[in-house]
Image 1 (tube, rainbow, N blue to C red):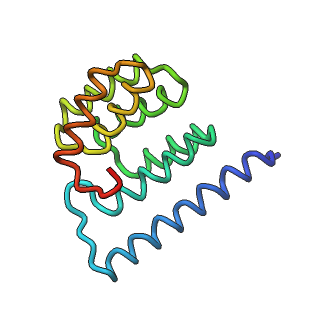
Image 2: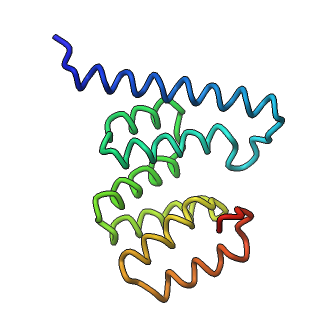
Length: 141
């Protein structure tokens, strides 16, 4: 018999996939570029973040695996999972590994800076936040 939580998880994954496809179509209509960290990847990352925030680790991992992730994607996922569990030192090490593989991965640098701050590593956090201020084109930064 299928449990209610299993049905909810399935419904959530379905809704995220529909939203993901809608975002891709919208991106094509509006003419967004899918360069280095493209629209599809941003949408997937946002969906995975939401799932991790709500403790839906299995659903988040399923969404990651459905996108044929790179080694850096897998490390980034594991780092965010560790961060969500307040295992900051381990998360920091993985975010740094992601940046060694992909030095221009902006979301990894943002997550690293924030995790360093949460871990009270103020000097390194300040360094990474200052780097982000110089190189990040995101107006929210």
